[in-house]
Image (cartoon, rainbow, N blue to C red; front, side):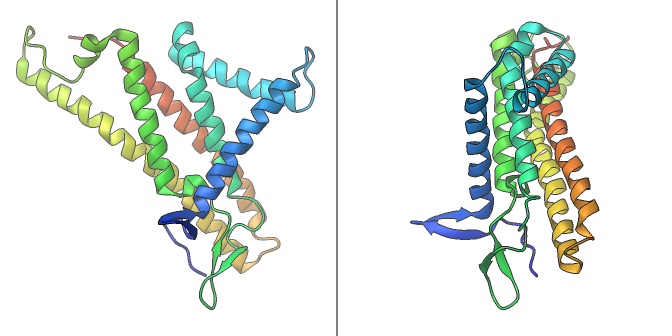
Length: 247
């Protein structure tokens, strides 16, 4: 048994490598889009079945967004981003728990395989890309809410206010914090999900029928928590970006 930190290549399209994590990410994206269209086309005044679940989830996310932002206008603006992040990460985390994870794949050497199923969240490339999208979205929302000048004062010295040195140092720290958020976002999600997948693979190889069950239940919970934490941090950073800088 081999555990690779990097996502494994399944095949190539020209010189472009197609990994198992990329395939799973595309499947999750397609699943979420198709599910959204199906639900929208079958909405009923009195919800039943899947519509009940979807409405409960959306209502919970909406209340969550309003509670954090304390601003209905801002909540309306950022809710699609926050809800999409949460739902996408949740399903990305859970897809790695499907039967066959780590046990079904292409032969690789004498005693190992390249698994078909690997969560996109267990691929650092995906978590970095998601983090970059969130951080840049936060900057755009901040600028559109309070304006370029006021937003820029968070990072650059104001020549009309003293002490200049303190202003420059604080602005530099603010600028560095925006960059480090991408790193912390990426590695927090990747580390937790990847560690869970490694744990499950080990348990599956030790005792494939009974031992993995409690760990699967734990990973279902961990997958939900990681999606919620990522969405919460994104929402908190959005709220901070829309606050005017204090002198």
